[in-house]
Image (cartoon, rainbow, N blue to C red):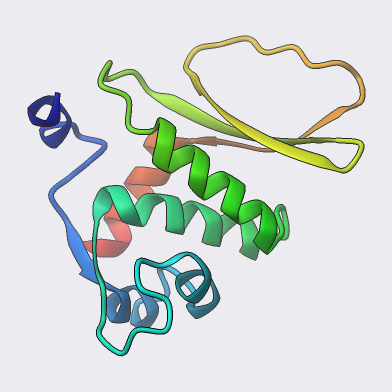
Length: 139
């Protein structure tokens, strides 16, 4: 499985330090301090592409005002536990709220999802497109 994932176009063999991510405006200081590998450490952490994508995603959603810092933790946990999948399918990340309660899920594309009328889909993001954006910023 690790071999299959290592050759995935979604997970290029790219690495960056926390300093690189900050200097290139890929991930904000706030996101790195809150969700980074070594908060408060004096030594710059090195992130793989797989580790950078959740941080980049949180940063994008925070910058757009779509999620709060607390909700970023939920998103990070979901992506770290559920992505990448070994099936090679494209996935979308959905972040939604109902009556102030937030949740997120990964869904393989294409998929038709139907929520009750009280659910507000806050963000629907293609992980393939997000990975391409991140690759463009790193290269």
